[in-house]
Amino acid sequence: MKMQNAIETKLNEAFDASILLVENESHKHSVPPNSETHFKVTMVSPAFAGQMKVKRHQAVYKLLSEELEMAGGVHALALHLYSPQEWEASGQVAPTSPDCMGGSKADSQLATSGAQNQSGGHS
Image (cartoon, rainbow, N blue to C red; front, side, top):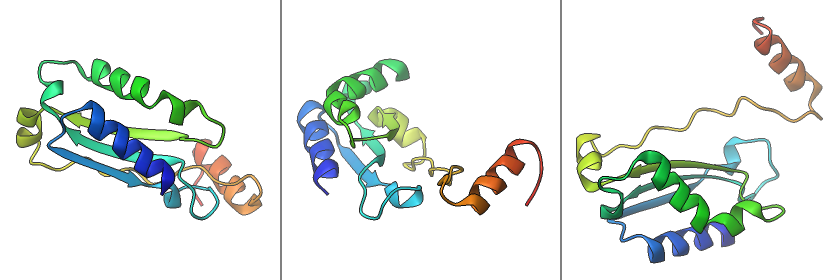
């Protein structure tokens, strides 16, 4: 939980978030148990009012650059960033993350299944 805690701390300090939810979704991916490599962030902040989504994302990426660039650090970061008005209009629900479509190359059955799906075949 060290990585998740670092992300939460940095986001809490940088944004006056009324809602901050950092979810470790690493268990949904082909990574070792207890990994902290895939995260979903849902954050509501007045700082996002009037700001384009790309600017919001850039601000978070800049803030978390150390975690994103370090070896063994964050591999994937799903961001759902809202102003309070947008959050209210959204029904106060962030989108769910899709299931991982990747797989371990060490698992030949999974790799074969993925190749068939990419070429239009079904398993």
